[in-house]
Length: 370
Image (cartoon, rainbow, N blue to C red; front, side, top):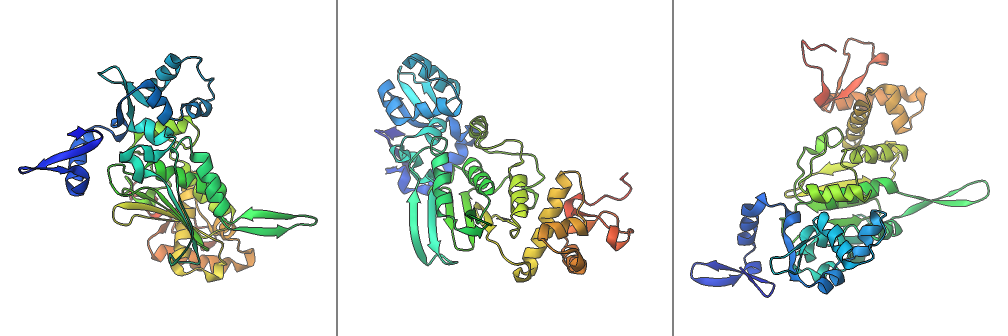
């Protein structure tokens, strides 16, 4: 039960605050899991004035490139049509979790969503010992997304390239890749995990983007698997705002951008209860360890496969920036990836120079037509 915005639960003969018993709250949310998070209530029975004060409704119309209605009725009708608010039984307005998480003027005004604000932490060096800056996002994901990306890009290191006449500053990480990974972390998180929210950590040699909730697909299949989202309404709206895609091509873009920038392959991992994506700063090929080389071969093979191509020694040389006369070095990298089971030869009987390679999950089955 809830009274004056405070939730209570009866345990035996005692009435306790629900927030003091997180394991009970987690169990309750799992029971209510048939109701999507987006349809839950962040605020119930708010007056019209309170609803407009809590939500950045002009940003909704700006993102959809629609004119702001001339009256309140038009505003409320549009917000209700997209399930951001709904009429309460008492005649006031309920603000849904979807409306609050996307368009909150201040997320901390919604007590149940405070921990879902994005944290950005900038460290000195390669570990978490020295923190240079830490900032927690205050706005909803949709109305604050461009500001969030701008803030992150402002913290990312860059390299200066001296041309014939001018110096130009080139970001260390592809901006498109950072944008896609941050959007994915916001959209695909598990909102029912309490006490945790999306986090962006910036180090001298990498950027790590973490969100609560294990991925719905294996991390090895991020490139080729059709999109699956545990927050369908949220993903749909973010697509309409052109913040993300629902086609499942976001990770493809990340891998492609990393290859264009000649960076080490990104890392996708799933520590217990979380999903983490890591972009690494430039590193010479000679400084990459075996695991990094195998990951680069595997993701390159995945990217070639989804574009209806096959990886060859030539395509991998181009991806790694290796000169043609060092073909033997790339052949050794391919052999390492084959021995690790990351890739397989599409035509094992072909001559080594003509051999094509596929990711392990695309290996041709016996007795199947090519």
